[in-house]
Length: 461
Ligand SMILES: [Ca+2]
Image (cartoon, rainbow, N blue to C red; front, side, top):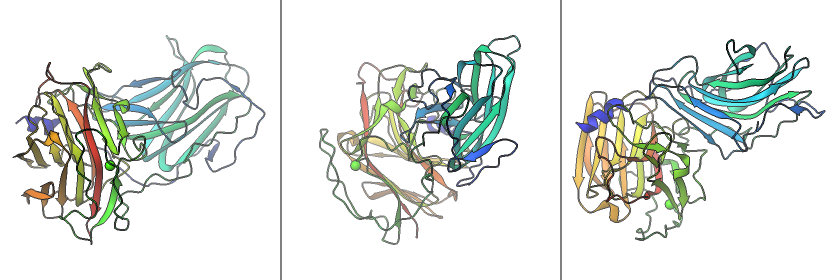
């Protein structure tokens, strides 16, 4: 029943993901690509601060989506770029997220505006310069671009304002619909543009979707040093599949930081509505150390939510139809904790959803494997060893005819009805509180950490 509630609110809204679209359809103004001609000096006078997002403080970020939508803005590890991730259930208006700052607009001489953006599923970016004060909020400049494609696009405009206004607002109104937008190198100058500092990876395309690779070469696993020491990581093919299945995704979490080129921070909190979850997902609660992804829940409020925690997902960077999906992790123990590894349909409709592992921290000897199809959920629980005492492997084999769940390479359950036939992406999170697990109490220790040794995915032959 309670999971059914979760099912009913785990929807993002409809989006059409047109992946790997290339090129931009631009017209009516000066436009060059990131690979195009770079304007030459003389050095210009910059009118705004932190156009390359090194500090961010001058900027204000506003999420205008409805309560069931969310937006997050994080600094990427690909140069000085901001990545805006927006999921919209009920669009507020033509935009759902805004990035803005105030600056002094100098009148009577040409002002050049330039920025770089990309959005591989396509989304609108509306750039406005206007008087920050009412009653009229006079607009000096207003231009909307449909940003699409995995390469950086550079948009450049020139106009001559007729007024000198020390309280002018520059605002990027973004996200007419669900999707991801990257923004970089914002310049508002008098005179000529400063040559744009290239964004690292600016000419590289985003990670391909479900790219099959050769069979994995088993490599020695870096072991987490946290106690208790996990059993040695298995390498090679899981017994559920044979060598005709090829690895399509692999993160061993052996870097010094989360690979933010693959994973996105956050997701919907499912705070309002049926779930009543109490956490805010923050990138700062996600880290990598000792060969593991560490999702940390803290007794620290953030953005109006009672607790801070971590969720990562691959929406827009990795999705796959069918396959064997496996992760190895150690769940935390504690009232109110709710770790999960799951798959969600890339269309972001309410279902289907495959919950490979869900656990409620007040009973870590039971976990839940659930298939939410379009005609309802089929949940099953498994009792056994205390799963919080060590690392365990949780997998699901999904074929056109069946979905089979595995615990430590042993099949525990198979579903054969209403099998989904479309692409799904990966999510790992540590929820805190809510109607199903209940709230943490004095016995819950914080911070608590959900450790994940690896995520590996194989594609069907
Ligand atoms: Ca690892």
